[in-house]
Image (tube, rainbow, N blue to C red):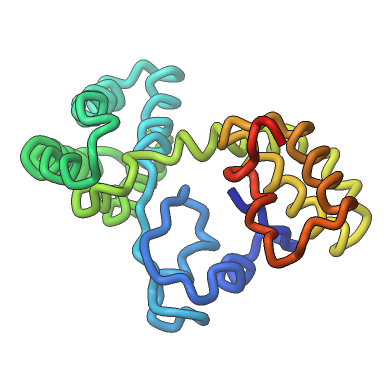
Length: 234
């Protein structure tokens, strides 16, 4: 996992970080990323975006919890049907997931799209529900990406759970001091979170790595010090 420091949330920062990357990017609905999908994108071809169904669901859940909307309830029911299929195929290969999605999920997603457009015609665009439906509509293309690529998750929940500790630490990170401090903070955060993903205790990893460097670990064998190569006995 890599954390990249930038002095702001402007889209050009993501553009710079992803220079040379051409593929599919799973993300939330932040509009700063829109420039990554345009032919004018700097640093590569337009990126294919996979949007998050959990964010779409959250918009409807907010309305249902607040107003008890039957329309929101129906939307949540339809999304639950799509998630039920994802639960069935979790852990299978990308090819198997893609086949199952084409056979089982595609019709449900198409029906949801038809339902979505019908509700948008009925509901005022300026109402709370109308705004939530418009959000889903704006990201509709990206919400369908998982139907064409078995590697893509239906949502970004797993990644959000990984980054949540960093987000909780956001105020402390304000004391990085300056841009170079922010970059250093990003590197350390990347090492710590990558260690955790690989089942390695972060303090033990940093301690053993720094001790190895101090003892003269050869630079050309730096790969041996990466979190996924840490040996329990080292």
